[in-house]
Amino acid sequence: MPLLQLPPEILIQIFDDVGSAYFRSDPSRLTVCKQWSIYARSACFRDLHLTQKTLRRLLSTPCEETWLPFIKDSVIALDLELKGFEDWGLTSDKPEATWNSAQGHAIRDAWTSGVLNDDISHLVRITKQSRKLRHLRIHATSEAHPEFYLQDRRDYLFTSTIRGFLSLSNLASLQLDLCGTRPMPSRTGERFHICTDIAALLPTLQRLRLRMREICPNALKLEQPSTDLRLDEVLVNLSLSHDSPRITSATHAARCGSSPGVGFLQLKADMQQQAKELVAQMASPKRVRVLTHARLNIELEAFDVLTGKNLALGECADWDAAGEVIEDSRVR
Image 1 (cartoon, rainbow, N blue to C red):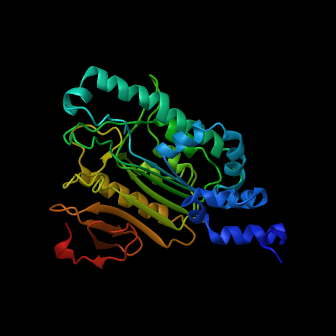
Image 2: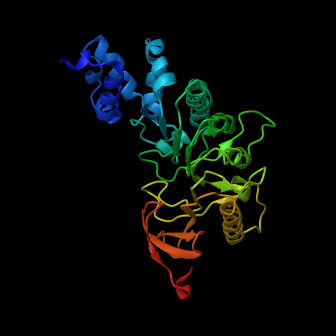
Image 3: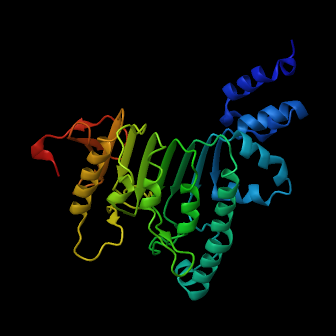
């Protein structure tokens, strides 16, 4: 029997097994024929990986109405990679003079508000209509000119943009890695603290991974105490290492709205304590960690909340790597 004569439910399973990556790697695989295209597009959009450039192209296409239903009906996992402004105009002989000027700042600011955050807000509106979206990952690294290495770091994501994603009510997994930008207000008087918005998702999430330039224990604090959270993995990374391949040193996250004199060690202790309180409310916790980096290098370390042990994970290690137990005398 020819493939496309199989029952629809079997075809859906076959195309899902082939996987989204197969169709993303070669768009021509989406257009074998009209019937094929229906199933192929559905499988392609099942795991949707977007950069800010592919998102711009997607929203600029005249055929938006043809792919919009596939996002609404097919997307289960959404992965969004952000890098900040990239249209530097590499022919400039003096990038420092160009981009540190008032005109350079104005160009980047206009792109931030008029392109990037508008595009992401559009994506938020689309995903809110999705019936299947369960997994969301956002990774935002520092904006970087390819030649001007000493450029000051610049925030480029609006708080309202991030808060839009945090209002999605059907998420089972959230990975929010904002190591390269702090959420910033888009208008005067806008509330910029998002930790409570993250905490509001705790009753429905199964997995949470966080890294932000500013964070506080409220991100792990339930509004209403519970004893049977289905949440089973929480990884909070306080290390801002490896935000950019050019950076050979690293800092740690700061406490939200912290004043001078409020140190990182207190934030670390408070996050660990709040993680312990959260574990007590989880039905079947599997992995709960607060990650940092060693004081004298950028090797990743983790406090395992379930065992009370400190683990050395190594440089560039995955947040959930097994690691080696650090003896008390080596704890840094």
